Length: 497
Image 1 (cartoon, rainbow, N blue to C red):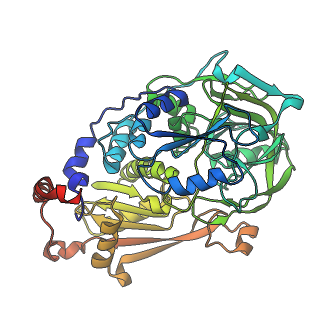
Image 2 (cartoon, helix red, strand yellow):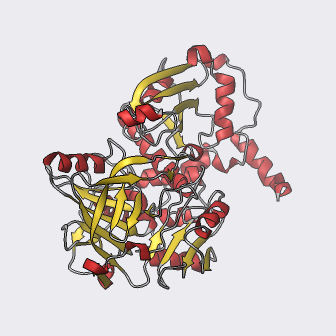
């Protein structure tokens, strides 16, 4: 209500019907399209120790900066590349398959419309694919030849897995899960794999360890952005993200199977690491500059993966998702997808008239959620806020949920805070929920509680709506109507150029 009217409710509604039309099949197609648009920079001769992290700091905080591919990284074979800064500007729209003129709230609305009624399309197993152009086994295994950077100066090691997804199988049901968990290089033939408690991959791992069996795992460290992003979007237990990828694209994802584990992975993947986690094999892991914006998460004893094979295409490309102080590229995607999933979760819980939802980038799309409703009854705002904090998409490592009226643009942080400042009475408008699902990455959990596994935090639910019983008498906002705002912008917007 205070800024460019392109985010108004009426224009957002036009985004609901934007058809999804992907212009790429794999990462190479995606890169070719970005290069054609003049939105790609190539850096040669950078060092993994320092230069890549410095470029990330310069490029990845701001919208509109180009993607960057690093080639001929020091100590790595020529043609072994890493891509960063791939989800900013109109590359968000390209990745998700929507028109470039949609703003981020319109993009989330369109994503929601496209995904809310999709039925999974089971992945298809094929005999061969580009990922098998190079098969490395035995003494030839050397994961250090890939351009895995030291993303932050204080990281505990090189992280090959940031824009990755990790494929595991439930030992009881056979359910295949893809999840995004960080992967650190220990040495040529071992990588560390940290998974937060409660995550699906962690549940699988705990089952294997309880049985005393090795857990098979495949780590896709080079994929097209959409596949990576789909793997990191909340899915219900029992749902295979490979089948979600197919549903989004409208056709089955062609997968090959690992020679050692039998696990499936996309045949056009750039790089896949295959191996096993053996019971009792642990080593220190981290610290890592995590998505919360802190150098934390140092683990004293985390399992490692013994690598059985590495598969990669000729001149392979790693997908990097830099974790730097928020906001950053990964948070920009999760804001779009999690907002859509969260809106659907709240509606399916029976909360009516959920107008818009935004999982704010500055909170990594988890810590600060804004829920817009059209108030229908006493307690409506409280209900919406509590459901948002406790549903599947909002439960993990959250912090603050703000519920606002439909006249507030939930994606505009200034408008949301304005509503908090002017419509919330702190004594009566803030609820606290205790003992919520958190993580060892949470900076407010003390070192002693972290060691003891007491990974809980609290949530604040802030009712920043007009008081329901007298909302019609609430003071009128001194802002023009959406129509009047658009008229003003059409006439005078050039003054901002």
